[in-house]
Amino acid sequence: MPITIELNLTTPALLFPAISLLLLAYTNRFLVLAQLIRQLNARENGNEIRAMVKAQISNLRNRLNLIRRMQFFGVLSFLLCTAAMFAVFLTQSLIGTGLFGLSLACLLYSLILSLYEIHISCQAIEIELTNIENKPVIDSQQE
Image (cartoon, rainbow, N blue to C red; front, side, top):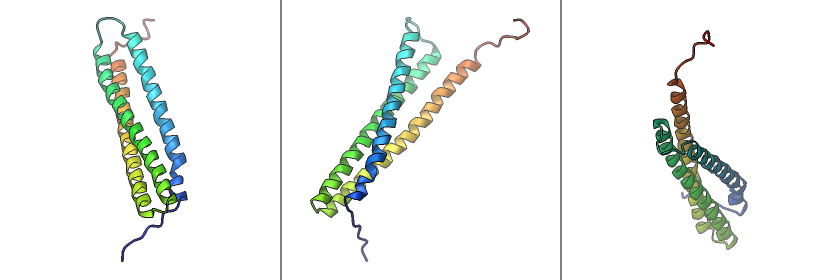
């Protein structure tokens, strides 16, 4: 017995607020990352770059690429969701169901990328903590 899925206009519409908030969160991540990069560039205005900064540059570039892909698949999910609603509106349920499934797959991939970006963000904090730990300790009795 085949499983039939009845899709109506409200099902894809349920994703609209979630995707919108997700894209807003991704944009905020991007803006914070851009600000960090600008601050790093202002701090390292000489010809030499510290090893810690070199490690951060690689991390920041990786995160920037991930956020770009997160945003791309989030927007693609939004577009596919809209197309699914349009197909359902035109009484093309099978096409609408397929588009909605693709929309969910894009959203899922975007969220997986987001989890990975969070992991990389934590690695960046570890680099900072290592840098702090490597600084000399001042004896409090000498102050």
